[in-house]
Length: 146
Image: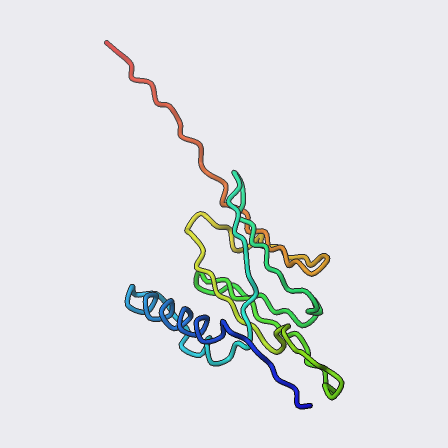
């Protein structure tokens, strides 16, 4: 029996990625044209905005934290990693879990503080915390009368 990897959504996922890349490029974004070609899978993420920070939660089960690279450059946060493949798949009857490299990029708002970004991985969830810049509180200026 030969190993058959069936992924009914792969063509739709590729089309969605291509459309997103096209829209980002047309909008003047800094789209990386190699993202689709170099990513074997795309981890799902949640992005949370708190009062003092943004939090990105990425599902990366089975990915060694040592194999995850996070970079911040020109207002773009990049996450790249790899879930290693099993060399001997001769006994597998079905393969549904994605393997290989992933690559995600996020444009950060001007309120993000790139100097204080932290990341941790726990139970297969990568948590990246991006603090917001300290706001200068408005100062009330009183007007004196004559």
